[in-house]
Image (cartoon, rainbow over all chains, first blue to last red):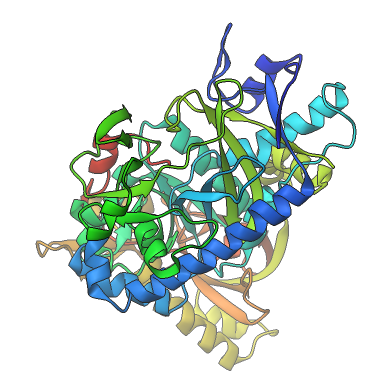
Length: 386
Length: 180
């Protein structure tokens, strides 16, 4: 694994426009940095990332299996009681998952360590699947990177292929937050994938969703929603006014309800409790568990549901070393052993492994200038070369 | 991991889909009838086929027809005397209205494994000659054997009467992006 400085493509502003990404004069594309790329060997990807990510997801499924049979686990994860049966049934009935992104701390030497699993509403999908692939093509054409560079990236095909086999009958609705352009961009891309897979689709915002007198959800044309591909996390859905109608609504959700168990940072202490010592896991505990005392010295505090690094703190000898501000401070916290991201000249890359239908389908690297990857992180493309 | 063609396809898709739906959408065979009697009179149909498919369309009608909170709104879209009361009530007990079924169409549904399926058809006040599906897709004015846009043979969605909106979205307004 190397970080290699590289010349940017000659027509970056145009590339940004074509893909609907924000471009600022002197700053380039927001959230994207191609002044360098990460080069991995195929062995690093296959043995250190691909294999372990699939194995760890298998462990996550064992946590789900335990959780759906143990109410104390569901309670610790903060899942509201009126959703316990709903979540458990979705798992027992084998409702299919589409995708997720595992964030790993990896330096090319030791085993990759799972920092968290974004299993419900992962971001950077389009950048990974489409934009970094185009970078590889064009950087190769323009002679910026060595000929023969490949990329670990089957993400687009895997998403289309998986959606085609989800068994969706009739119209598929897609919904996200209103006014959040990034989320909408991701959702529009997913919708495009679904159309390529032959589905009939319709896009709306979560605010637009209506309800009828039989607890069925409706769109703006009063059509009854039967399948909802949402970019809106389960913990929000469960907490909101219409949430209590969800179990009786008959809607098939993607991701399925059981993803509420694995997209929760409470997954991390549960994994450690069940598979302590696994080379890809870090010691982790619910904050007020007796075991948490084992994390003396430096450790990381994370709220159960924070997003994009918000409210994550690094604690050193009882003192807060860093903290990202955010709105999630009222939640329960977990603590995790400190395993710093590797540093490459003041940059800290976080490796994301995309899983589609539980198979690894692509890789992304996001860099920040701090140890906690946050909102200012930049996507840095990667290449695979032996 | 080489996949030049696939990804090019993805990038150009926005353009090609529009072009295709505007002028080249694939047509498929279908049968359109105004009534059960018209179907029975068609020499290519048996009475049993007509009755089965008519019954299927009829049974979907109440679920898939567009719904209105007032007779006047319904008639504005479908014409005077062309609306009826739906067998549903709003939560406050009010009536719900829907257009009359004006015909039915049979054909092979997309993904329907070739079996004969049928769905109800409607006619709008503005364009009373043209049959439309419950999802407002035009299927032309020809009865009997005809060809219709493939998308018109999709299974129609259920229509309901929304009693409330806005019950989702509060967390998004508070926390911002949902992405992780």
